[in-house]
Image (cartoon, rainbow, N blue to C red; front, side, top):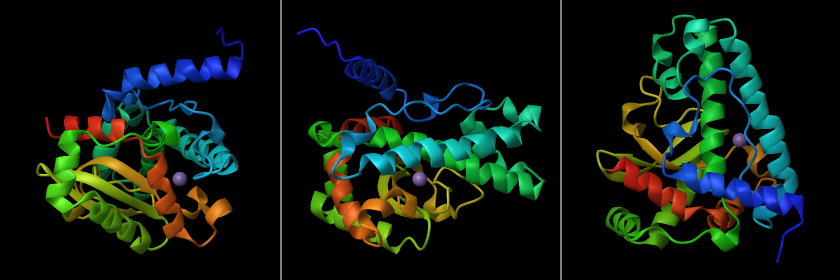
Length: 246
Ligand code: MN
């Protein structure tokens, strides 16, 4: 049947684009030069993750919060042509070398915010498409945490104990899986800014800022984390694991 709904057609095209780019995750998902950073559309409609994340939260989170990080990032980079020429990964890796503390903090918060949210959107998918970890990732989860259930419990505990705004992460560190957390918009690729013990290649990041869940879950962060597993994109997470251990 021909699909005459332009929204569905657009959605289909975007899903195709996502599939094509998923193998290049994570660092190559961005343009070579960070500036000007652009807010790309989500690869699914705002309501596609309901009831686990509501449409209004997604709309505000993407269109206001992520857009805000991008706006601040671009404003800061307008004043420094050399930094603007770096890729976002280079920019984040080189943050410790920036001597202007105010600029470094602005780029850390907003460059990190841009990278983390782009990474996060790709980790989500409608529940019907959530899928399962690859055999290789499933085996690694079992080896590191005992079972999928134990892994989810440990990840949930890390998400719950992250005080204030921040992220819970599943990373590959020295070839092994590890759960960690970061404050604000830091992430485990920020060498020199997060503790060495937390450094690694992120394959899964969960936004535990209140703006990610408050409309629907209020103070019940653990409920958000539990529901969130329903919309985890295991295909993308598995591809990231494969890339990080290749
Ligand atoms: Mn967020």
